[in-house]
Length: 320
Image 1 (cartoon, one colour):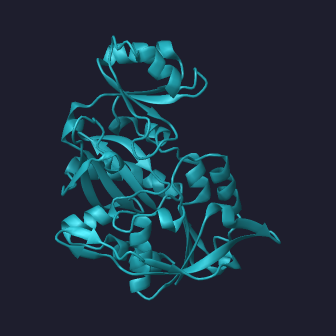
Image 2 (image 1 turned 45 degrees about the horizontal axis):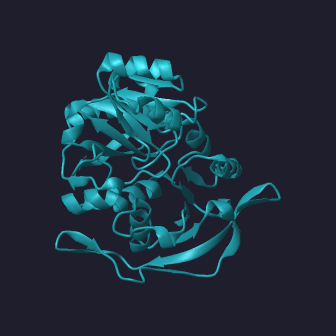
């Protein structure tokens, strides 16, 4: 297969953590050809989506004493070539949030890829429609009590009713800007004003789940089916379990209830062309649906002695 990955700058990726690197590495080990590009390298020529693509070669990471180790010069790229993206068998859109104006424009360009020739993962329209916070609100039977609002009075009443709550910016990633709110906090007004940009931008507010102290479980779904999970446990004084803020990772199983949650989501994910997804679950409740650049494969592989990257690429080859 010929695969293109739209990434953040490869020099800023962590080969022992980033799922994009795991997928590219698995594809190369299986003999497929891989190119990389960035969103600002996309263009439209003669009505076709094109990109300046660089062929990339990775030096695979090694598991040493239970940790991934990478060589200092772990990747090599060739000079870029302007190519039509429909010349690829598949194009992976793996840019980190925020889903801002340049991100949306990139999805418009990807819309022009002929779906009869090339599979785009995830679907450009799916990426636009699936805000990683709000998307979960379509599945009210499996989420905690949640509101979305920019109204300080509405948020204050919700926090008072719940006793404690978690505020999340709608466009954040990796735990950025998530706040713990409780009634009577003297900083409440300022926290809400900053988060909502003085009442101009809505935020998500969810009831605080005490089970969060035991971990925030990331489950990887492939075409709606769970293929692996990792638990992210808060450490130190931070209530967030995200790996990006120092959360500790641990091996974990997928429970029957969590499998039912996956089954609840699967039809809608497939309908929206969201093939590779990471969902977050706390205490048996769905809290987020991550579709832009879900991560966790490296941690799952390390803890379970598996290769989800290989499984994903095998699925892709079969689907194409």
